[in-house]
Amino acid sequence: MHYYYILNKPCNMVSQFKSSHEVPLLGNLHFNFPEGTHAIGRLDQHSEGLLLLTTNKKVTRLLFQGESPHFREYHVLVNSRVNQDQLNQLSQGVQIRTGNEMFYTTRPCKVSLVDPPAIQFNSDYNPSERVPHTWISISLTEGKYHQVRKMLTAVGLKCKRLVRIRIENLQLGNLAPGCIKELTEEEFFTGLKISNY
Image (tube, rainbow, N blue to C red; front, top):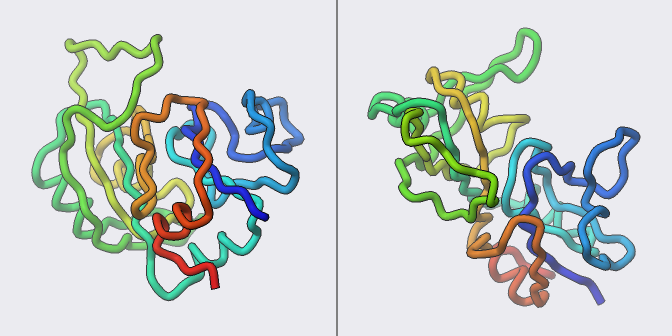
C-alpha cells in the first residue's frame, strides 16, 4: 500500500527529508510520514506552495518522463507594475541562462495578471500599498532550474514571492502553509492525469 500527500510547503523549507546543512526540512513538520516518503519534484528553498509527496517510487517517472507534458501553475509576486509587452514576452518564450555559456529559449506558456492571488498569507505578511507590486499567474509544462525566476529577470522583473498553486488538477486550495492533506491513490493519479499501470 502506498501513501499520497499534498503539502503547502512554507518559504525557507528545503524539499527533502535529509541534508548535510542546518536547514528546515520536511521532517521538521508535525506529521508522521510513513517510511519511504519522498517529494516528487522540487520547490527551491525560497519558493512556496504545492509539493507532492508519496511512498510510490514510480510516480516521478510517470509524471516527468511520460509522453504528455504536465501543467504547473505559479502565482508570482513581482516588485513593480507589469506591462502588456512583458506579459507577451513571457507567454511567447524568453531566453534564459542554463549554464556558464549556455542559453535556452522557454516554451510558450500561459501568463496573466491575477488579483488577488489564490494563496493564504502568513500572519506576518503585509504588503505595503505604497510599494508597486503585481501578482502574475504563470502556467508552464517545463521546469528548468529556477526557470520562473529567470524568466522574470529576462523581462526586467524581480521575483519577490513564488507560490506553486497547481499541478494539473491537483490544487493547493485553502491548505494553510505547513499543512498536509492525504489523498487516495485514485484522487492522486486522476488529478495528475497519469495512469498507475
